[in-house]
Every structure is written in structure tokens, then in C-alpha cells.
Length: 308
Ligand SMILES: Nc1nc2c(ncn2[C@@H]2O[C@H](COP(=O)(O)OP(=O)(O)OP(=O)(O)O)[C@@H](O)[C@H]2O)c(=O)[nH]1
Ligand SMILES: [Mg+2]
Image 1: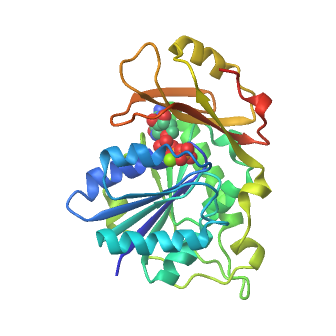
Image 2 (image 1 turned 90 degrees about the vertical axis):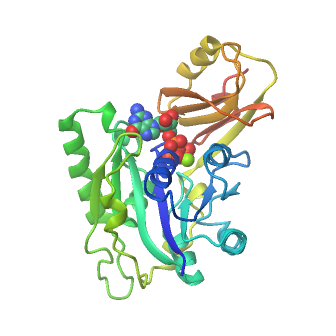
């Protein structure tokens, strides 16, 4: 039986970073396959992951929690046949509810080791009222408060307290019996998704998912939360300064920008990561396509995206 982990969490919380570290640090001698799903039809995470790991399946477009559920199940069978892995990691898009994916993995007969929700300690307050984020917390049995390097110990404590309150309110409940599904959950703290080995040594496999009302088990979350994306292909090479200036002027409804760009200042293509005002660049090997940026946000429109 294949064991699986679902890695969920809001846009830019550190899901991909966490998976890269987890697979490298704790699953080195095991056969692991990764499925990643992103908003939009130009994926960035798949390309990053493929550079560090070969068994990666990218499910682009839409979100696996709604329109892509059958596509997801097909993808899992494909990956099982191709790689025969011992472990499967599934990174959901930042705008999806993990519950339908939990159901799919259960239907397929996989042992669901844990649903791990990454939380961005620094930007938590900007998105804590988002319903999808709250369901992500409710559907997880491991919460990782990430980006601890960006906040004080006091802030970490406050985030933890607020998360416990959200967990209580949104914890999965059986629709028929009203019984709480996750009686226990664990909270870890990390920087750059690096967690202690205990997280993977003491999981509490998830069995017999509760009955949920139809509208919770099967919602089109992208539509409901109005989170959308806009892709821009860059025709000319920019300097980092120009790009940074434009990013600093983005409106607040654009939470996340990610892409692969060739800039005047660097010889290689760079992965650009922008999360709620913070920008990071890192080199990427084996990329030869066009430079592009994906802008993700709430009610995003062409006017929100800068002209390049
Ligand atoms: N300072 C800091 N930055 C982090 C940490 N974890 C991740 N990041 C950065 O945050 C950005 C987003 O990280 P990802 O791992 O791509 O986040 P994600 O949740 O996979 O993002 P989406 O898939 O787009 O939702 C990147 O620039 C990371 O390097 C952390 O603990 N501290
Ligand atoms: Mg990611």
C-alpha cells in the first residue's frame, strides 16, 4: 500500500520549500513521487521540483479540489504505475481545500499518513480570514508554522493561539453525528520548512473520513474565493531594479507573484518568488523557455498587473 502526505497551506506559505527539504532530509533512501498542482496553466513548482527530484507529476490548471478531481485520480494511478513509489507527496494549490484530495487518496486505497498545513507566520494576518485557509487548517492534523525567522517569539505564540482557535472552529466534523474528526493534531515551528524528524516518525494515519455535506466536499473554491491568476510573458530583458520597482507598486489584492525570468543582472534564469511584498530570487538550471510571471490574487484584473 502506498503511503501519502498532503501538503496544504495558503499561497506562498512555503509548501514547495517544505517538501524539498522533507524529501531530501528524511526520505533519501525511499522511493518518493510528488504531485503538484498550481493555479494557472503555467507551472513553476513542477519545474523547481523536477530540478531536485525526478519523480514529479505536474497537474496544471484549475485546482485539484474541484474541477480536477478525476484528473488527479488518473494522475495518481499513472505515477504509481510509472515509479512504483513507497511514498507520495501531494502539494495542493494555495487556494484549495484538501478534503476532496483526502477522499480521492482514500478511494485509491492509499494510507494517508498526514495532512500537513504550512502557515506563513509573517503574513498570517493578511489572510487569516480567508475561508479556504480556514478549511485548510480544519482539514489538517499537522500544522507547521513556517517563516519563524521573520517574526519574534511573542508573535509566534500569538499565531499559535489564533491557529488553535481556528482549528477548533473549522475542525472537520461528521455531518451526520457532529463528531469532531481530528481529536488530536500537532503544531511544529519551522524556518524554510525545515522540521524535526519527529514530524515524520510519529504521524497519526487518517482513516475513515467523515461524511461531509455536499457543498463542503465538492466546492469550486477558486470561483468562490475569487482567487485568480494572470500570466505575463516578458518580451524584453529587465533589470532587477525595474522589476523590483514594479513589484513594489502592486496593489494589495495581488498576494503572490511567481515566475521564471531572465534579468540583465544575472547570467542564468532566475525563479522569482513574491509573497505579500517580499521578493526572493534564486537561480534555476535547465530552463530555456520564455520569461514569464504569474500574478495571483483576489479579483485580479489586467489593470492590477504592471505593464512590462
Ligand atoms: N524568510 C523565509 N522565507 C521562506 C520560508 N519558507 C519559504 N520561504 C520563501 O517563501 C517563498 C514561497 O515559498 P514556496 O515554498 O514556493 O511557497 P508555496 O506555499 O509552495 O507557494 P505556492 O505553491 O505558490 O502557494 C519563497 O521565496 C521561499 O524561499 C521561511 O521559513 N522563511
Ligand atoms: Mg508551491
